[in-house]
Image 1 (tube, rainbow, N blue to C red):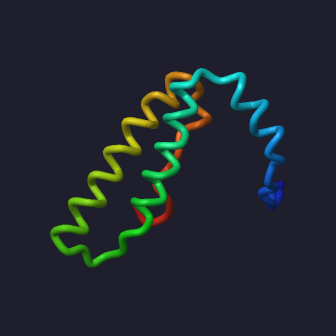
Image 2 (image 1 turned 135 degrees about the vertical axis):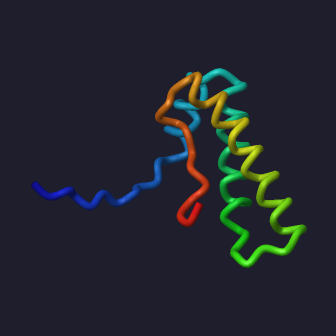
Length: 85
């Protein structure tokens, strides 16, 4: 059995708005915060200086806080910081 290669397809803004209207406001805010924190954590590459290490850890902590809210609502919404972490 082989895994199919799924291509991510963007959803229209209207569909995204409809999905968002069915979710609690706190979950929507956590989803935005998780996306921003994951993007910020992916920005840093080794070798880290002291400031970069602190900034990366701050972004990972923000991602963990947002993921806690997302996992309580739906575990499928949890974001990972990306490859290499």
